View 1 (cartoon, rainbow, N blue to C red):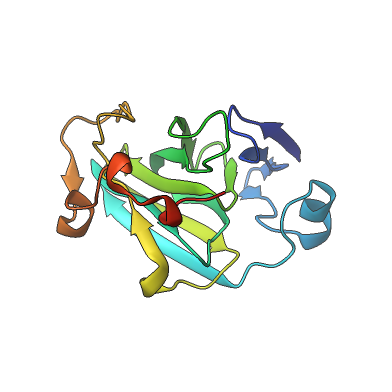
View 2: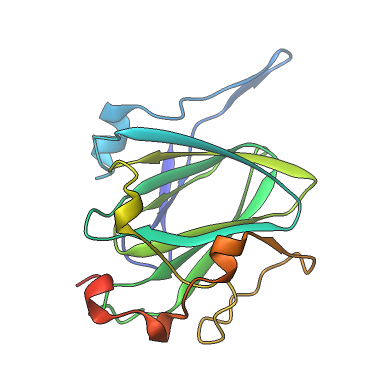
Length: 182
């Protein structure tokens, strides 16, 4: 496995070793001992699976005061995955990083606490799995609108599908300081 730093401190792009033959492929999607060597959390408490059609944007979500770190990978299809730095003291505060993840490359994105997360489906349908370091807590859930002009995220698919909940999230400038990270 190789692990690559991204332009966001703490956000890692992982490339597992893939074993291919005439039958298909095999790889370890999680191995506590190996991931510990890379400094990733040893404890994930919840796994989520999401399936969406082309153009769907889910996010930009995060939790506070019980934040979730996430290990994201695509089981089927292709997505444009986005993280937004919400650490007030970070030189990258309010900026975003995006990467295409697919079932062809099997890359994983580790997103630590301190970031909002979202994605857009690029093909007809995609299924995503993400491991979380903290349980989902509806009372801790916060989000930023996907089309916040201060972020200017370049979503690749122009025919966008967004839930009513995500459509009505606040802009980053409307979020109180106590709902951001130190």
